[in-house]
Image (tube, rainbow, N blue to C red):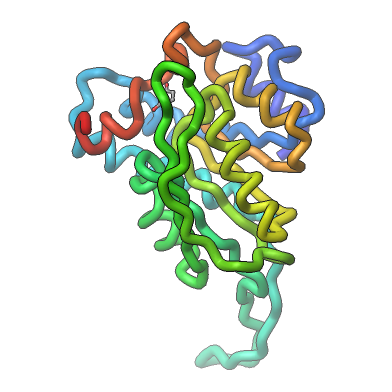
Length: 229
Ligand code: URA
């Protein structure tokens, strides 16, 4: 995606200065992505329809993120002729952040069946808005492996920074955050943390409110999928 297209996709709702220039970000600007995101935003959408829209949107985000995956060519025969088959030479590790990222995991795996999956469990302290880790299930070494972190909401950026720090501690250097929505505040936090992360999202919304929710956003992505805990 060119810089020009990136700016076009954001122009309608975001001043260019709100996207940190030092952050690698792709906003998936596509009518089908916008339609699924609208379904998710609509407060009348029930849990089941929300999960379906999230799965379909995840497919589009992963499709866009995976453009840069490395491939290798293997000779095969079609019924007609010899040709080269394309295979992923270094599939990413998929890391859904529990609980909201769970709803993205199946579809990401369906699109990249070669991928392995790790898990990070973070709860948000609603008073401090800080992430509290309760689970970490990751391969010991992530050196040389691309990693796709699946978390629908990039809000304050605290959970994402925490997750990427866990991944970096295991040697990951090529991390992509796959988020349905991002807030400018979260993007700023990621850029300031200088973690070298790439962000793929369907929208950069206006701001966070005083409770740390993205505005206009879609509410609590975990509750919208699974109901309140
Ligand atoms: N997490 C959510 O689920 N929604 C928000 O708006 C912010 C963080």
